Length: 546
Image 1 (cartoon, helix red, strand yellow):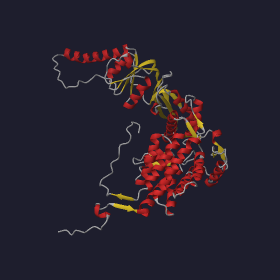
Image 2 (cartoon, rainbow, N blue to C red):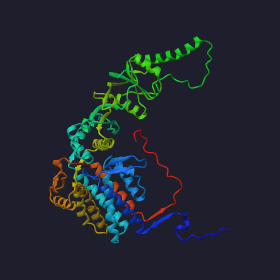
Image 3 (cartoon, one colour):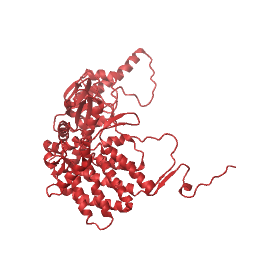
Image 4 (tube, one colour):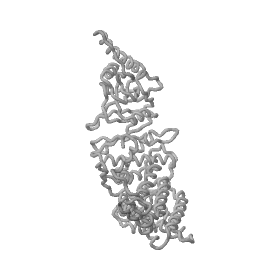
């Protein structure tokens, strides 16, 4: 009989062998804080226009070179449970605003760093979390008073370019004016008269070769493929879209055909051909010039398409079919039938073009009712074009937010220092221990101008002192850090047109404080023993391009 070894009393008695537990300040709270601090400091060096790039090689050995926090976190696959909470807060920011992901990570890390100092002074986690909540509520009260710019007419390309510039500048410093021009044109051209702006209506097509200056906006859609038949050009074309293959239809049930003579064999195949020709002739008779198929185009069908002078385009992706149907205002038909006039789409021009050595099919709609725009990016390497795409993606999300709320705050660290100045004054009015947490909250806001300065190679402390000095004067609330100056100096951001989206700051503060508060309130970490075998990967977002 095997000897039963009794387990030590306590929590280990309840759990399986191999389970781990950490509790108390030293083991749980400080451990969580240090992990989040490390993670935040990694991201801090990627903040702002002069932020450094990170080279990430993910689990399938794909390489990314970027300073975009959203991409870095998505590909890093963070394991630590506390750091995961910050990543989740950042993902919420990405879903809500589409920009400002780095803001959440850096600020949550700075709050936890400040909390560690207060914990070592003997203040409890509950008081710190309570103080942070008070400071957040006060900050959200102050934010609307700091608004320095507002957009009423978002169909005005010049005004839109003014506010989108800083969003693109933070990702692609030096290329911002050219990219801004492309983006503003693309967004304004497809803005609907009624209803909301859809981010998915701005497509991006990356074509290797040439340089960024050769990038352009196409009103309509662009696909990197060749046409199926001989016809390569159609103007003022009616378009029909099928989600099925254009071919001889197989019967649904299996049947046996008994052929008794050579004539019957000839008639059998010619009957099928005749049926297919009748179908394609009926499609051509409705005035259709372009047939788009979601599956293969059979050889026989292709022969008849060429005979009736129809252009055939094949798209493998069902997502692309849906987008094209939106672009040309057509209905996607599930089987080969004669379409009614309501089901047909219209396109000004469908043609083949060559960019470098890549052949593309372009569906161009020059009219006012163009619903989709495509930005064609040219570049020397895939990594470079991916980074440009991320910058444009942030810009498109900014445009979506400004159509909902056109308020803008001063950028370049001005908003953060103004909030810090006012919160420090508010902390002096509080009687309890939470005043220390509110003061630390104000100090944590200094991390942004400091990061901007340090990433640009200047002394962060000197800049923060200069900004505080400017913000203590009555007209100094719009003074931020001048990133382009040789020496550490400040600038009036309203003159330099450096604006930050109000929504991005509002949600960024909320999510960062929420994540920091959750992490501070954890006093025990209990980890069950891991199951054997490899960890199953969760399916990524179901879009064909991811």
